[in-house]
Image (cartoon, rainbow, N blue to C red; front, side, top):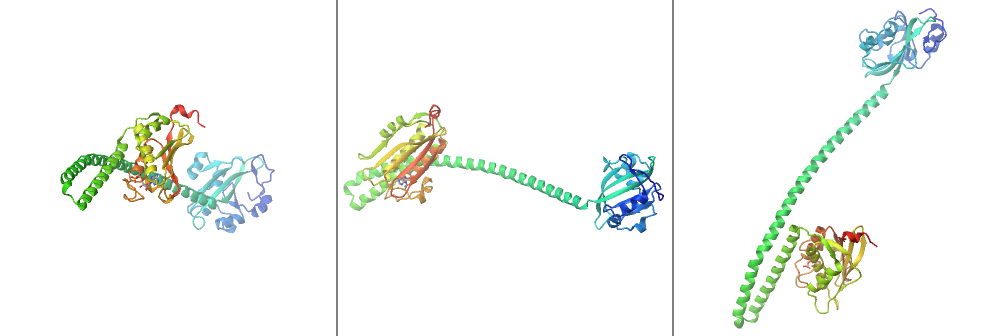
Length: 422
Ligand code: ADP
């Protein structure tokens, strides 16, 4: 092929004229080399010198193109084209990483890593095409190289990053699943502990009633028998004992009521609130001047009668108890109705509650006053909250100390009611 193989380009094939193309290929920025039909290198351009680190002077005239890529002698793609290698033979040397070029007839391309090239090896994309004479006979092969190390490393980094990310996601998912099952186990333990505690509170408060009653009876007998000989001071001891016993009784009863809510199975039924409050009015022992006003039209709610009673009895009783106005007034009405729920209010003209304590007072035994100022056990609002929650409702409070208080109770409406909301 040192002689000119003059030809016009044939359809999709390289027809090579060495003298014409040599100058052109020399200056090409694409690393290119050409071998003739005897595998002898006849062109090794500047870009090829740069990428391989081997000069044209060392390569031209030799059959050692393999030196640039491998540490041992073996055919390279251009050699396989010149020898007309079969697909199997190409696969034997390049594995599955090669394919026929879609642009040039008889050309092959491949991408491979060459560990001996460059400092840490080089990834090359290379294309080898046959060179034909005018009759179509193969007279050599041309191979072009493209350094794709940067892209391959970026792809590898990306893959590593993605793998790490997937691993991280796997780890986090496993941790989450673990935390979730631990939480479920803890919730079950807590539920059991809660159940045991409420059983304990129930049994303790229930069983305490009898001895308390006995002590009260004996104290009454003693006082009756000793009354004629008691002096003022001794009488005040009996009074103190009586009021302590009364308080103990209230505490035990409230505790019993509180723990009953936890154990109770709800008997939900449609309760027309107007009838309910009429009944409540009768069961409350209001003082003569106390005003309990139930205003406006009231809906039918879906609730358990006993729980509903506990909610409103406690709220109304508190409205009168924590109250120094004259007359004392508690008003009940409807404040809102939507999404199958209705909101009722219980408003009093009492002493009010500082907003700082609005959350606190719903907790067990949290009182804002001494027993001397206002009697009580500190369990009433805890009962309200527990009962309302059990009824699938909620309770909140609006009050600025000194200006009365309004408690809002949300409850599910009876189903037939939800069709005609305002
Ligand atoms: P108790 O009534 O037995 O003290 P509660 O749990 O019913 O217990 O109430 C807790 C505290 O919240 C009361 O001690 C009182 O300080 C305050 N409180 C409750 N209701 C009212 C109210 N309507 N007005 C003012 N303070 C109230």
